[in-house]
Length: 118
Image (cartoon, rainbow, N blue to C red; front, side, top):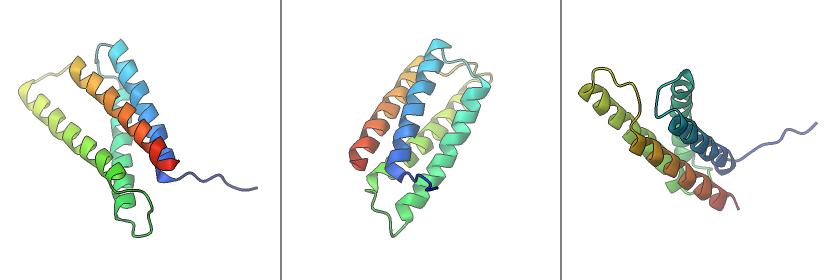
């Protein structure tokens, strides 16, 4: 039985699709935090670590801009989130513009990943 292996760009396309779904669910919940939001954020941090590994792997054939774009997205999101928490003692929801931007990045990452994988 052969195992199916997926490349970094192919898996990244799935991550981009998941980001779009996450944004749609957040939009429907008016940006309110849920456990799912928390777990998806943890998943994004893990994928950023995978992206860093992919970017620094000397045998990688993936263009560096693809994993770098994800790493920058996570870092910018983390900094933005920390600033929001500092400004608002009890932040109960993610602002809608941020939700839409998250969905837009998911679209970019999905399309870019598919483009790189073909």
